[in-house]
Image (cartoon, rainbow over all chains, first blue to last red):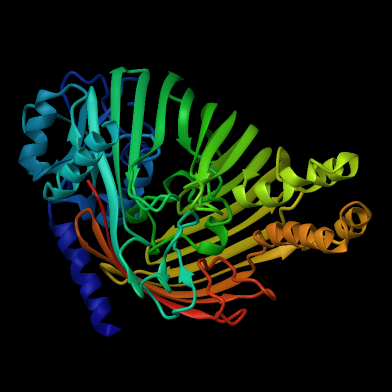
Length: 135
Length: 420
Protein backbone atom coordinates (compact mmCIF):
# COMPACT_ATOMS: atom_id res chain seq x y z
CA UNK A 1 0.00 0.00 0.00
CA UNK A 2 2.77 2.35 1.07
CA UNK A 3 4.80 1.37 -1.99
CA UNK A 4 1.84 2.18 -4.25
CA UNK A 5 1.50 5.62 -2.70
CA UNK A 6 5.18 6.24 -3.23
CA UNK A 7 4.95 5.18 -6.86
CA UNK A 8 1.93 7.45 -7.35
CA UNK A 9 3.82 10.32 -5.75
CA UNK A 10 6.87 9.68 -7.90
CA UNK A 11 4.59 9.59 -10.97
CA UNK A 12 3.08 12.91 -9.96
CA UNK A 13 6.49 14.49 -9.50
CA UNK A 14 7.65 13.17 -12.86
CA UNK A 15 4.52 14.53 -14.54
CA UNK A 16 5.05 17.95 -12.99
CA UNK A 17 8.73 17.83 -13.81
CA UNK A 18 8.07 16.85 -17.41
CA UNK A 19 7.24 19.50 -19.93
CA UNK A 20 3.65 20.54 -20.34
CA UNK A 21 1.68 18.95 -23.14
CA UNK A 22 0.14 21.35 -25.57
CA UNK A 23 -2.60 21.01 -28.15
CA UNK A 24 -1.62 22.43 -31.53
CA UNK A 25 -3.41 23.44 -34.73
CA UNK A 26 -2.41 24.89 -38.09
CA UNK A 27 -1.51 28.61 -38.01
CA UNK A 28 -4.37 29.36 -40.40
CA UNK A 29 -6.92 27.89 -37.99
CA UNK A 30 -8.89 30.92 -36.65
CA UNK A 31 -9.01 29.44 -33.13
CA UNK A 32 -6.95 31.22 -30.52
CA UNK A 33 -7.64 28.91 -27.59
CA UNK A 34 -9.58 25.84 -26.51
CA UNK A 35 -10.90 24.92 -23.06
CA UNK A 36 -10.16 21.51 -21.57
CA UNK A 37 -13.82 20.58 -22.15
CA UNK A 38 -13.55 21.50 -25.82
CA UNK A 39 -10.38 19.41 -26.19
CA UNK A 40 -12.16 16.50 -24.49
CA UNK A 41 -15.20 16.90 -26.80
CA UNK A 42 -12.97 16.65 -29.84
CA UNK A 43 -10.68 13.84 -28.68
CA UNK A 44 -13.53 11.68 -27.34
CA UNK A 45 -15.48 12.06 -30.57
CA UNK A 46 -18.38 14.01 -29.07
CA UNK A 47 -17.79 16.77 -31.55
CA UNK A 48 -16.25 16.39 -34.99
CA UNK A 49 -16.02 20.13 -35.69
CA UNK A 50 -13.91 22.88 -34.19
CA UNK A 51 -15.85 25.33 -32.02
CA UNK A 52 -16.81 27.94 -34.56
CA UNK A 53 -16.87 25.44 -37.44
CA UNK A 54 -14.70 23.40 -39.73
CA UNK A 55 -14.20 19.67 -39.36
CA UNK A 56 -11.25 18.56 -37.25
CA UNK A 57 -8.70 15.95 -38.36
CA UNK A 58 -7.51 14.38 -35.09
CA UNK A 59 -3.97 13.16 -34.63
CA UNK A 60 -2.87 10.86 -31.83
CA UNK A 61 0.69 10.98 -30.57
CA UNK A 62 1.76 7.40 -29.83
CA UNK A 63 4.44 8.56 -27.41
CA UNK A 64 2.05 10.61 -25.27
CA UNK A 65 -1.31 8.89 -25.64
CA UNK A 66 -1.63 7.57 -22.09
CA UNK A 67 -0.69 10.81 -20.40
CA UNK A 68 -2.86 12.89 -22.72
CA UNK A 69 -6.11 10.93 -22.36
CA UNK A 70 -5.49 10.58 -18.63
CA UNK A 71 -5.10 14.33 -18.45
CA UNK A 72 -8.16 15.35 -20.43
CA UNK A 73 -10.59 12.53 -19.66
CA UNK A 74 -9.22 10.29 -16.91
CA UNK A 75 -8.91 7.43 -19.40
CA UNK A 76 -5.92 5.28 -20.28
CA UNK A 77 -4.73 5.13 -23.89
CA UNK A 78 -6.27 1.63 -24.15
CA UNK A 79 -9.61 2.86 -22.85
CA UNK A 80 -9.54 5.67 -25.36
CA UNK A 81 -8.84 3.15 -28.15
CA UNK A 82 -11.80 1.00 -27.11
CA UNK A 83 -13.98 4.11 -26.86
CA UNK A 84 -12.99 5.15 -30.39
CA UNK A 85 -13.71 1.65 -31.74
CA UNK A 86 -17.35 2.16 -30.71
CA UNK A 87 -17.55 5.45 -32.53
CA UNK A 88 -15.67 4.32 -35.62
CA UNK A 89 -17.76 1.20 -36.26
CA UNK A 90 -21.11 2.84 -35.69
CA UNK A 91 -20.48 5.59 -38.22
CA UNK A 92 -20.50 8.35 -35.59
CA UNK A 93 -17.01 9.65 -36.16
CA UNK A 94 -13.49 8.91 -37.28
CA UNK A 95 -10.86 7.65 -34.89
CA UNK A 96 -7.70 9.80 -34.77
CA UNK A 97 -4.89 8.82 -37.09
CA UNK A 98 -1.65 8.12 -35.32
CA UNK A 99 1.81 9.60 -35.56
CA UNK A 100 4.79 8.04 -33.82
CA UNK A 101 5.96 11.05 -31.82
CA UNK A 102 5.61 14.77 -31.21
CA UNK A 103 7.84 15.74 -34.09
CA UNK A 104 5.75 13.78 -36.57
CA UNK A 105 2.54 15.23 -35.13
CA UNK A 106 3.89 18.79 -35.44
CA UNK A 107 4.97 18.17 -39.04
CA UNK A 108 1.52 16.85 -40.01
CA UNK A 109 -0.27 19.71 -38.24
CA UNK A 110 1.97 22.23 -40.02
CA UNK A 111 0.90 20.73 -43.36
CA UNK A 112 -2.85 20.27 -42.77
CA UNK A 113 -5.09 23.29 -41.95
CA UNK A 114 -7.76 20.92 -40.49
CA UNK A 115 -5.39 19.00 -38.20
CA UNK A 116 -5.24 19.08 -34.42
CA UNK A 117 -2.77 17.14 -32.29
CA UNK A 118 -0.95 17.11 -28.97
CA UNK A 119 2.79 17.26 -28.33
CA UNK A 120 5.36 18.13 -25.69
CA UNK A 121 5.74 21.89 -25.51
CA UNK A 122 9.27 21.60 -26.95
CA UNK A 123 7.89 20.04 -30.14
CA UNK A 124 5.45 22.89 -30.80
CA UNK A 125 7.68 24.84 -33.17
CA UNK A 126 7.03 27.80 -35.42
CA UNK A 127 4.91 25.95 -37.97
CA UNK A 128 2.02 25.37 -35.57
CA UNK A 129 -0.20 27.29 -33.18
CA UNK A 130 -0.72 26.30 -29.54
CA UNK A 131 -4.37 26.52 -28.42
CA UNK A 132 -4.36 24.62 -25.13
CA UNK A 133 -1.85 23.69 -22.49
CA UNK A 134 -2.26 20.72 -20.16
CA UNK A 135 -0.35 20.80 -16.89
CA UNK B 1 -18.11 -13.83 -57.69
CA UNK B 2 -18.83 -10.77 -55.62
CA UNK B 3 -18.67 -12.85 -52.46
CA UNK B 4 -15.34 -14.37 -53.46
CA UNK B 5 -13.86 -10.95 -54.14
CA UNK B 6 -15.12 -9.71 -50.82
CA UNK B 7 -13.69 -12.75 -49.05
CA UNK B 8 -10.31 -12.15 -50.65
CA UNK B 9 -10.42 -8.51 -49.60
CA UNK B 10 -11.29 -9.50 -46.04
CA UNK B 11 -8.57 -12.10 -45.79
CA UNK B 12 -6.12 -9.57 -47.18
CA UNK B 13 -7.13 -7.27 -44.35
CA UNK B 14 -6.48 -9.99 -41.79
CA UNK B 15 -3.12 -11.01 -43.17
CA UNK B 16 -1.54 -7.59 -43.48
CA UNK B 17 0.19 -7.32 -40.12
CA UNK B 18 -2.06 -5.14 -37.98
CA UNK B 19 -2.48 -2.72 -40.81
CA UNK B 20 -3.18 0.83 -39.83
CA UNK B 21 -6.55 2.02 -41.00
CA UNK B 22 -6.10 3.30 -44.54
CA UNK B 23 -7.11 6.89 -44.52
CA UNK B 24 -7.41 9.94 -46.59
CA UNK B 25 -10.17 12.46 -46.34
CA UNK B 26 -12.18 10.83 -49.14
CA UNK B 27 -11.91 7.11 -48.47
CA UNK B 28 -11.27 5.20 -45.29
CA UNK B 29 -10.94 1.48 -44.61
CA UNK B 30 -10.92 0.06 -41.11
CA UNK B 31 -11.75 -3.24 -39.51
CA UNK B 32 -12.26 -5.30 -36.41
CA UNK B 33 -12.20 -8.93 -35.51
CA UNK B 34 -11.92 -11.68 -32.98
CA UNK B 35 -10.00 -14.93 -33.11
CA UNK B 36 -11.43 -17.14 -30.40
CA UNK B 37 -11.25 -20.72 -29.19
CA UNK B 38 -14.27 -21.88 -27.23
CA UNK B 39 -14.66 -25.10 -25.26
CA UNK B 40 -17.92 -26.43 -23.78
CA UNK B 41 -17.90 -29.13 -21.13
CA UNK B 42 -20.93 -31.16 -22.35
CA UNK B 43 -21.10 -33.66 -25.20
CA UNK B 44 -24.91 -33.89 -25.44
CA UNK B 45 -25.66 -30.27 -26.39
CA UNK B 46 -23.85 -27.23 -27.87
CA UNK B 47 -23.02 -23.76 -26.64
CA UNK B 48 -23.49 -21.55 -29.67
CA UNK B 49 -22.10 -18.17 -28.63
CA UNK B 50 -24.13 -15.86 -30.89
CA UNK B 51 -27.86 -16.19 -31.47
CA UNK B 52 -27.82 -17.44 -35.01
CA UNK B 53 -25.58 -20.48 -35.42
CA UNK B 54 -26.43 -24.11 -36.18
CA UNK B 55 -23.45 -25.69 -34.47
CA UNK B 56 -21.34 -24.62 -31.54
CA UNK B 57 -18.90 -26.08 -29.05
CA UNK B 58 -19.80 -29.17 -27.04
CA UNK B 59 -21.66 -31.91 -28.85
CA UNK B 60 -20.55 -30.85 -32.36
CA UNK B 61 -16.90 -30.43 -31.42
CA UNK B 62 -15.55 -30.02 -27.94
CA UNK B 63 -13.49 -26.93 -28.80
CA UNK B 64 -14.63 -24.66 -31.61
CA UNK B 65 -12.93 -21.80 -33.40
CA UNK B 66 -16.25 -20.83 -34.99
CA UNK B 67 -18.22 -19.80 -31.90
CA UNK B 68 -16.49 -16.49 -31.14
CA UNK B 69 -14.35 -15.75 -34.22
CA UNK B 70 -15.27 -13.07 -36.73
CA UNK B 71 -13.80 -10.46 -39.01
CA UNK B 72 -15.41 -7.16 -40.01
CA UNK B 73 -14.29 -4.69 -42.62
CA UNK B 74 -15.64 -1.18 -42.97
CA UNK B 75 -15.32 1.18 -45.90
CA UNK B 76 -16.33 4.81 -45.70
CA UNK B 77 -16.53 7.25 -48.51
CA UNK B 78 -16.84 10.96 -47.69
CA UNK B 79 -17.29 12.86 -50.96
CA UNK B 80 -18.30 16.11 -49.25
CA UNK B 81 -18.19 17.37 -45.68
CA UNK B 82 -21.91 16.63 -45.27
CA UNK B 83 -22.21 13.33 -47.08
CA UNK B 84 -20.88 9.95 -46.06
CA UNK B 85 -21.43 6.40 -47.32
CA UNK B 86 -20.60 3.42 -45.09
CA UNK B 87 -20.30 -0.25 -45.99
CA UNK B 88 -19.57 -2.85 -43.34
CA UNK B 89 -19.19 -6.50 -44.14
CA UNK B 90 -18.56 -9.34 -41.76
CA UNK B 91 -17.25 -12.88 -42.05
CA UNK B 92 -18.45 -15.20 -39.32
CA UNK B 93 -20.45 -18.44 -39.09
CA UNK B 94 -23.81 -17.76 -40.74
CA UNK B 95 -27.21 -19.34 -40.04
CA UNK B 96 -26.55 -21.47 -43.14
CA UNK B 97 -23.47 -22.84 -41.39
CA UNK B 98 -21.05 -21.40 -43.90
CA UNK B 99 -18.61 -18.46 -43.80
CA UNK B 100 -20.05 -16.30 -46.54
CA UNK B 101 -19.71 -12.59 -45.82
CA UNK B 102 -22.78 -10.65 -44.77
CA UNK B 103 -23.51 -7.00 -45.46
CA UNK B 104 -24.26 -5.56 -42.03
CA UNK B 105 -24.07 -1.85 -42.76
CA UNK B 106 -24.70 -0.15 -46.09
CA UNK B 107 -25.98 3.36 -45.71
CA UNK B 108 -25.69 6.96 -46.72
CA UNK B 109 -25.69 9.69 -44.10
CA UNK B 110 -26.33 13.34 -44.77
CA UNK B 111 -25.53 15.86 -42.03
CA UNK B 112 -27.54 19.08 -42.11
CA UNK B 113 -25.51 20.43 -39.20
CA UNK B 114 -23.06 18.82 -36.85
CA UNK B 115 -26.01 17.90 -34.64
CA UNK B 116 -28.69 16.83 -37.10
CA UNK B 117 -28.35 14.09 -39.70
CA UNK B 118 -30.44 11.68 -41.69
CA UNK B 119 -29.30 8.17 -42.52
CA UNK B 120 -30.80 5.85 -45.14
CA UNK B 121 -29.93 2.21 -45.71
CA UNK B 122 -28.78 -0.71 -43.60
CA UNK B 123 -27.56 -0.16 -40.05
CA UNK B 124 -26.63 -2.34 -37.08
CA UNK B 125 -29.97 -2.13 -35.28
CA UNK B 126 -29.87 -0.42 -31.86
CA UNK B 127 -31.75 -3.04 -29.84
CA UNK B 128 -29.28 -2.94 -26.95
CA UNK B 129 -26.98 -0.90 -24.75
CA UNK B 130 -24.02 -2.23 -26.75
CA UNK B 131 -26.44 -1.81 -29.61
CA UNK B 132 -24.72 -1.22 -32.85
CA UNK B 133 -21.17 -2.10 -31.79
CA UNK B 134 -21.99 -5.42 -30.13
CA UNK B 135 -19.98 -7.22 -32.83
CA UNK B 136 -16.86 -5.19 -32.06
CA UNK B 137 -15.53 -7.18 -29.12
CA UNK B 138 -12.45 -4.96 -28.78
CA UNK B 139 -14.78 -2.09 -27.83
CA UNK B 140 -16.30 -4.13 -25.00
CA UNK B 141 -14.90 -5.45 -21.77
CA UNK B 142 -16.16 -9.03 -21.89
CA UNK B 143 -15.28 -11.77 -24.36
CA UNK B 144 -18.83 -11.79 -25.77
CA UNK B 145 -22.03 -9.93 -24.87
CA UNK B 146 -24.22 -11.76 -22.32
CA UNK B 147 -26.12 -14.50 -24.16
CA UNK B 148 -29.36 -14.21 -22.15
CA UNK B 149 -29.84 -10.59 -23.23
CA UNK B 150 -28.14 -10.35 -26.62
CA UNK B 151 -29.35 -13.70 -28.04
CA UNK B 152 -33.01 -12.81 -27.56
CA UNK B 153 -32.93 -11.20 -31.00
CA UNK B 154 -31.32 -13.18 -33.83
CA UNK B 155 -31.27 -10.06 -35.98
CA UNK B 156 -28.24 -7.79 -36.39
CA UNK B 157 -29.22 -5.25 -39.03
CA UNK B 158 -32.25 -3.33 -40.22
CA UNK B 159 -33.00 -1.36 -43.39
CA UNK B 160 -34.18 2.06 -42.31
CA UNK B 161 -34.54 5.76 -42.76
CA UNK B 162 -33.67 7.55 -39.55
CA UNK B 163 -32.87 10.85 -37.96
CA UNK B 164 -29.84 11.36 -35.71
CA UNK B 165 -29.77 14.24 -33.25
CA UNK B 166 -27.18 15.36 -30.74
CA UNK B 167 -27.89 17.92 -28.06
CA UNK B 168 -26.02 19.19 -25.04
CA UNK B 169 -27.90 18.51 -21.82
CA UNK B 170 -26.91 19.25 -18.23
CA UNK B 171 -23.20 19.20 -18.93
CA UNK B 172 -23.39 16.01 -20.97
CA UNK B 173 -24.53 14.97 -24.40
CA UNK B 174 -27.81 13.41 -25.48
CA UNK B 175 -27.85 11.33 -28.67
CA UNK B 176 -31.26 10.61 -30.15
CA UNK B 177 -31.93 8.19 -32.95
CA UNK B 178 -35.39 7.48 -34.38
CA UNK B 179 -36.47 5.78 -37.55
CA UNK B 180 -38.71 3.44 -39.49
CA UNK B 181 -37.93 0.53 -41.76
CA UNK B 182 -37.88 -3.24 -41.98
CA UNK B 183 -35.82 -6.32 -41.28
CA UNK B 184 -35.19 -9.22 -43.64
CA UNK B 185 -33.07 -11.78 -41.82
CA UNK B 186 -32.02 -15.36 -42.26
CA UNK B 187 -32.12 -17.48 -39.11
CA UNK B 188 -31.09 -21.07 -38.42
CA UNK B 189 -33.14 -23.64 -40.35
CA UNK B 190 -35.75 -25.97 -38.88
CA UNK B 191 -35.42 -28.33 -41.87
CA UNK B 192 -31.86 -27.87 -43.14
CA UNK B 193 -32.23 -30.65 -45.69
CA UNK B 194 -34.98 -28.71 -47.46
CA UNK B 195 -33.98 -25.10 -46.96
CA UNK B 196 -30.66 -23.87 -45.61
CA UNK B 197 -32.26 -21.14 -43.51
CA UNK B 198 -35.53 -19.98 -41.99
CA UNK B 199 -36.68 -16.38 -42.22
CA UNK B 200 -37.35 -13.71 -39.63
CA UNK B 201 -38.88 -10.55 -41.03
CA UNK B 202 -40.03 -7.42 -39.24
CA UNK B 203 -42.37 -5.08 -41.08
CA UNK B 204 -43.58 -1.65 -40.02
CA UNK B 205 -40.45 -1.39 -37.90
CA UNK B 206 -40.31 1.79 -35.80
CA UNK B 207 -37.76 2.63 -33.12
CA UNK B 208 -36.26 5.24 -30.87
CA UNK B 209 -32.95 5.06 -29.07
CA UNK B 210 -31.64 7.63 -26.62
CA UNK B 211 -28.14 7.62 -25.18
CA UNK B 212 -26.95 10.11 -22.61
CA UNK B 213 -23.24 10.51 -21.92
CA UNK B 214 -21.91 12.56 -19.05
CA UNK B 215 -18.42 12.07 -17.65
CA UNK B 216 -18.13 8.43 -16.55
CA UNK B 217 -21.83 7.72 -17.18
CA UNK B 218 -23.53 6.33 -20.26
CA UNK B 219 -27.27 5.76 -19.93
CA UNK B 220 -29.44 4.30 -22.62
CA UNK B 221 -33.13 3.66 -23.20
CA UNK B 222 -34.60 2.32 -26.42
CA UNK B 223 -37.67 0.72 -27.92
CA UNK B 224 -38.31 -1.09 -31.20
CA UNK B 225 -41.73 -2.13 -32.45
CA UNK B 226 -42.89 -3.99 -35.50
CA UNK B 227 -44.77 -6.89 -37.01
CA UNK B 228 -42.72 -10.05 -36.66
CA UNK B 229 -43.02 -12.91 -39.13
CA UNK B 230 -41.02 -15.99 -38.25
CA UNK B 231 -41.23 -18.42 -41.11
CA UNK B 232 -40.11 -21.75 -39.68
CA UNK B 233 -40.40 -24.16 -42.57
CA UNK B 234 -41.20 -27.15 -40.35
CA UNK B 235 -44.09 -25.37 -38.62
CA UNK B 236 -45.43 -24.12 -41.93
CA UNK B 237 -45.32 -27.55 -43.60
CA UNK B 238 -46.43 -29.64 -40.65
CA UNK B 239 -48.94 -27.36 -38.94
CA UNK B 240 -50.10 -24.18 -40.59
CA UNK B 241 -50.49 -25.19 -44.24
CA UNK B 242 -52.47 -28.33 -43.28
CA UNK B 243 -54.63 -26.27 -40.87
CA UNK B 244 -55.64 -23.99 -43.73
CA UNK B 245 -57.32 -26.96 -45.39
CA UNK B 246 -59.76 -27.52 -42.55
CA UNK B 247 -62.30 -24.81 -43.16
CA UNK B 248 -63.02 -21.80 -40.99
CA UNK B 249 -61.99 -23.51 -37.75
CA UNK B 250 -58.62 -24.55 -39.16
CA UNK B 251 -57.98 -21.10 -40.60
CA UNK B 252 -58.95 -19.42 -37.32
CA UNK B 253 -56.53 -21.61 -35.36
CA UNK B 254 -53.78 -20.93 -37.91
CA UNK B 255 -54.33 -17.18 -37.70
CA UNK B 256 -54.31 -17.30 -33.90
CA UNK B 257 -50.96 -19.09 -33.63
CA UNK B 258 -48.90 -18.65 -36.76
CA UNK B 259 -46.12 -16.12 -36.14
CA UNK B 260 -47.02 -13.90 -39.06
CA UNK B 261 -47.31 -10.14 -38.63
CA UNK B 262 -47.25 -10.66 -34.86
CA UNK B 263 -47.19 -7.29 -33.07
CA UNK B 264 -43.92 -7.32 -31.19
CA UNK B 265 -41.78 -4.94 -29.21
CA UNK B 266 -38.33 -4.87 -27.69
CA UNK B 267 -37.62 -2.39 -24.91
CA UNK B 268 -34.32 -1.91 -23.16
CA UNK B 269 -32.79 0.24 -20.48
CA UNK B 270 -29.19 0.16 -19.41
CA UNK B 271 -26.19 2.04 -18.20
CA UNK B 272 -22.45 1.98 -17.76
CA UNK B 273 -20.30 3.68 -15.15
CA UNK B 274 -16.68 3.77 -16.22
CA UNK B 275 -14.26 5.82 -14.16
CA UNK B 276 -10.65 5.18 -13.36
CA UNK B 277 -10.34 1.64 -12.12
CA UNK B 278 -14.00 0.68 -11.92
CA UNK B 279 -16.42 -0.35 -14.66
CA UNK B 280 -20.02 -1.29 -13.96
CA UNK B 281 -22.68 -2.15 -16.52
CA UNK B 282 -26.31 -3.14 -16.10
CA UNK B 283 -29.05 -3.77 -18.62
CA UNK B 284 -32.69 -4.86 -18.56
CA UNK B 285 -34.63 -5.82 -21.69
CA UNK B 286 -38.21 -6.87 -22.39
CA UNK B 287 -39.29 -8.84 -25.45
CA UNK B 288 -43.03 -8.85 -26.06
CA UNK B 289 -44.91 -10.61 -28.83
CA UNK B 290 -48.11 -12.44 -29.64
CA UNK B 291 -49.19 -15.73 -31.27
CA UNK B 292 -46.91 -18.73 -30.58
CA UNK B 293 -44.04 -16.55 -29.35
CA UNK B 294 -43.32 -16.15 -25.64
CA UNK B 295 -42.62 -12.91 -23.82
CA UNK B 296 -39.22 -12.76 -22.14
CA UNK B 297 -37.44 -10.44 -19.71
CA UNK B 298 -33.67 -10.56 -19.44
CA UNK B 299 -31.05 -8.68 -17.50
CA UNK B 300 -27.33 -8.58 -16.97
CA UNK B 301 -24.83 -7.10 -14.54
CA UNK B 302 -21.11 -6.68 -14.99
CA UNK B 303 -18.35 -5.33 -12.78
CA UNK B 304 -14.69 -4.91 -13.64
CA UNK B 305 -11.61 -3.56 -11.90
CA UNK B 306 -8.59 -2.26 -13.83
CA UNK B 307 -5.09 -3.13 -12.72
CA UNK B 308 -2.82 -1.56 -15.30
CA UNK B 309 -3.28 -3.45 -18.58
CA UNK B 310 -5.43 -6.11 -16.92
CA UNK B 311 -9.14 -5.88 -16.17
CA UNK B 312 -10.64 -8.84 -14.33
CA UNK B 313 -14.42 -8.93 -14.34
CA UNK B 314 -17.41 -10.78 -12.95
CA UNK B 315 -20.78 -10.93 -14.68
CA UNK B 316 -24.24 -12.35 -14.22
CA UNK B 317 -27.07 -12.62 -16.75
CA UNK B 318 -30.50 -14.23 -16.74
CA UNK B 319 -33.52 -14.63 -19.00
CA UNK B 320 -37.01 -15.45 -17.80
CA UNK B 321 -40.18 -16.26 -19.75
CA UNK B 322 -43.25 -14.25 -18.77
CA UNK B 323 -46.66 -15.98 -18.85
CA UNK B 324 -45.46 -19.07 -20.64
CA UNK B 325 -47.77 -20.07 -23.49
CA UNK B 326 -49.80 -23.26 -22.90
CA UNK B 327 -51.76 -24.37 -25.96
CA UNK B 328 -54.91 -26.12 -24.74
CA UNK B 329 -57.90 -25.30 -26.94
CA UNK B 330 -56.59 -26.49 -30.30
CA UNK B 331 -57.10 -30.24 -29.86
CA UNK B 332 -60.72 -29.98 -28.57
CA UNK B 333 -61.69 -27.69 -31.46
CA UNK B 334 -60.07 -29.85 -34.12
CA UNK B 335 -61.01 -33.27 -32.76
CA UNK B 336 -64.55 -33.29 -34.26
CA UNK B 337 -63.07 -32.46 -37.67
CA UNK B 338 -59.90 -34.56 -37.75
CA UNK B 339 -60.15 -37.16 -35.02
CA UNK B 340 -58.49 -37.05 -31.64
CA UNK B 341 -55.05 -38.30 -32.74
CA UNK B 342 -54.42 -35.78 -35.51
CA UNK B 343 -55.93 -32.97 -33.42
CA UNK B 344 -53.57 -33.63 -30.51
CA UNK B 345 -50.60 -33.95 -32.86
CA UNK B 346 -51.32 -30.49 -34.29
CA UNK B 347 -51.75 -29.03 -30.82
CA UNK B 348 -48.45 -30.58 -29.78
CA UNK B 349 -46.84 -29.07 -32.87
CA UNK B 350 -48.02 -25.56 -31.97
CA UNK B 351 -46.91 -26.08 -28.36
CA UNK B 352 -43.50 -27.15 -29.59
CA UNK B 353 -43.19 -24.05 -31.79
CA UNK B 354 -44.09 -21.88 -28.78
CA UNK B 355 -41.57 -23.75 -26.63
CA UNK B 356 -38.78 -22.68 -28.99
CA UNK B 357 -39.04 -19.24 -27.44
CA UNK B 358 -38.85 -20.52 -23.85
CA UNK B 359 -35.20 -19.91 -23.07
CA UNK B 360 -34.96 -19.42 -19.33
CA UNK B 361 -31.31 -19.52 -18.39
CA UNK B 362 -28.72 -17.93 -16.18
CA UNK B 363 -24.97 -17.54 -16.57
CA UNK B 364 -22.26 -16.57 -14.14
CA UNK B 365 -19.09 -15.41 -15.87
CA UNK B 366 -15.59 -14.71 -14.70
CA UNK B 367 -12.97 -13.32 -17.01
CA UNK B 368 -10.06 -11.03 -17.65
CA UNK B 369 -9.18 -8.58 -20.39
CA UNK B 370 -5.54 -7.87 -21.10
CA UNK B 371 -4.73 -4.90 -23.33
CA UNK B 372 -1.73 -6.73 -24.62
CA UNK B 373 -0.71 -4.45 -27.45
CA UNK B 374 -1.98 -1.31 -29.08
CA UNK B 375 -5.27 -2.17 -30.86
CA UNK B 376 -5.31 -5.68 -29.40
CA UNK B 377 -6.90 -7.26 -26.36
CA UNK B 378 -6.47 -10.80 -25.15
CA UNK B 379 -9.36 -12.20 -23.11
CA UNK B 380 -10.07 -15.35 -21.17
CA UNK B 381 -13.54 -16.09 -19.85
CA UNK B 382 -15.25 -18.85 -17.91
CA UNK B 383 -19.05 -19.17 -17.97
CA UNK B 384 -21.28 -21.42 -15.90
CA UNK B 385 -24.44 -21.78 -18.03
CA UNK B 386 -27.61 -23.13 -16.40
CA UNK B 387 -30.89 -23.58 -18.31
CA UNK B 388 -33.70 -22.93 -15.85
CA UNK B 389 -37.12 -23.96 -17.11
CA UNK B 390 -38.61 -27.47 -17.21
CA UNK B 391 -38.09 -29.22 -20.52
CA UNK B 392 -36.06 -26.32 -21.89
CA UNK B 393 -32.48 -26.08 -23.05
CA UNK B 394 -32.22 -22.32 -22.56
CA UNK B 395 -30.05 -20.80 -25.26
CA UNK B 396 -28.09 -24.02 -25.77
CA UNK B 397 -28.51 -25.60 -29.20
CA UNK B 398 -28.22 -28.87 -31.07
CA UNK B 399 -29.55 -30.92 -28.18
CA UNK B 400 -29.29 -34.72 -28.23
CA UNK B 401 -31.88 -37.03 -26.68
CA UNK B 402 -29.38 -37.82 -23.91
CA UNK B 403 -29.37 -34.27 -22.57
CA UNK B 404 -30.86 -34.21 -19.06
CA UNK B 405 -33.22 -31.26 -18.78
CA UNK B 406 -31.73 -28.19 -17.11
CA UNK B 407 -28.25 -29.69 -16.91
CA UNK B 408 -25.62 -26.97 -16.59
CA UNK B 409 -22.36 -26.71 -18.52
CA UNK B 410 -19.09 -24.80 -18.40
CA UNK B 411 -17.66 -22.67 -21.17
CA UNK B 412 -13.94 -21.89 -21.34
CA UNK B 413 -12.87 -19.43 -24.00
CA UNK B 414 -9.85 -17.39 -24.98
CA UNK B 415 -9.89 -14.75 -27.65
CA UNK B 416 -7.79 -12.11 -29.32
CA UNK B 417 -9.77 -8.98 -30.28
CA UNK B 418 -8.32 -6.41 -32.60
CA UNK B 419 -9.18 -3.27 -34.56
CA UNK B 420 -7.26 -1.74 -37.42
